Length: 407
Image (tube, rainbow, N blue to C red; front, side, top):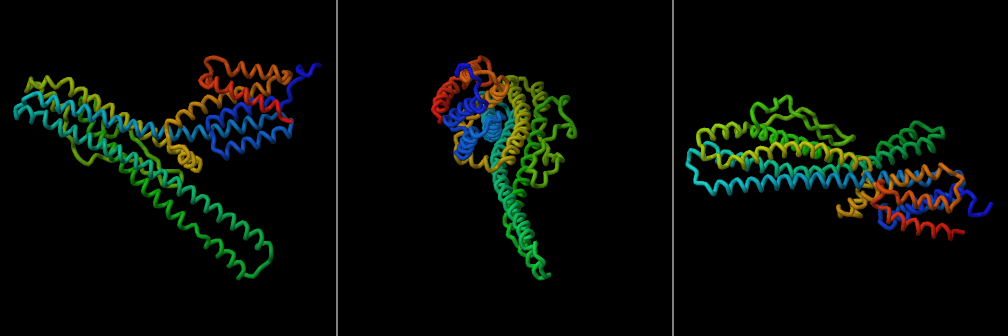
């Protein structure tokens, strides 16, 4: 059998795909330096076995999936916070337009008192609540990050204490000792200083808990106000409204899900407007802009509710791997760069999963034919990795050059 027709050895098939991925990852800085070094070391170990278990590819896929979750967490948190700010700015602009419309009309005292004045006061109060909600959501993210840091420190301290306990039990405990010696061992373990870490975590949990409760109260106030800008027949009963829960973390007590009640009664601006139109026909000039504001208020509350839920989902990812989250945050603070990296990772993972199957499928392919098949896979249209196909082809050329010169 000619050499070029001999089946490619399993580790060379896996190595070609792995080295292509590593070249792509290194070019676009998709992994931290320590993760990349670990992957390269695993690649070197790949040539020491011929099991064909595609261990290198599986390890790469796992690392990339974890990294993808971290980038998704960054992107989601940023998207939620910027979305809230844009929503507040939109409401502000529409209220300014309403004030400008009022300025073009010479309203009587009765017309102003019947609706125009109360609605302006109502809208400005709602805008103020939404602005405060925006600020509190940003503070909440910072508090949850602080909690995640202290939770990580506390876990490390507890692990160290447990290791100390096991070490003392294993070494000193292997010898028969007096009651005095046993008491000394117990005292050493119990006096291990992790109390500061525990105290810091408890304070951070309390602060995050209090902020979560404050946000829920604000959201309920906003909901109650928006109900007043809705047709009374379409309003929710207080016990039928959708409750929003905000968890603090798996390490702390979750805030109660009992929905807080609004502290004040708000003007029924929808009913006021309906009556004012009949009593003061000139107010019909305001109808379009007022109805637009009514609709905007309903939409704004709905979006704020979704934002609360989406933010909590993103934050839970941060808690799942807080060390990697903060390392990535320190290394790359540009959210646009993170989104680009996320798109690349989202393409690279399915490519590796697909090619991992090919690596194991047909062991009769020669190296040359296997290489051409991988090129064909990269170049396929309408695949999850189509947006990075050109980069992958360049990385494959580099990988083949490196692989072909290995001794």
